Length: 94
Image (tube, rainbow, N blue to C red; front, side, top):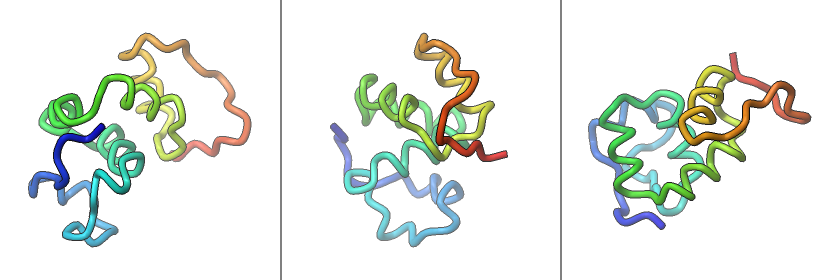
C-alpha cells in the first residue's frame, strides 16, 4: 500500500503526457509504477521501494503491459522471476 499520496516534483519529467498536478499514485499505482520502472533513475527506484511494498512492485512487473522488453527483463531478473520468451497477448513497446 502506498504510504504517500503525491509524487516528488522531480518526477514530473516521467509523466510528460498527463496533468502531473492531478496524478495520484494512490489512485493510479500501476500507471505510476510502470512509468517509473521504465524511465526512472536511482532516485525513482528508491522512492518506489520506500512507498510501495516489494510484493506490489513484483506484481506490477508480472502484470506489466507498458514496459519494453529490456525493462521487463531487467525487473524480472531483479526480482528473481523467470524470464519470459513469448507472452501471449502482450505487445512490446519498442
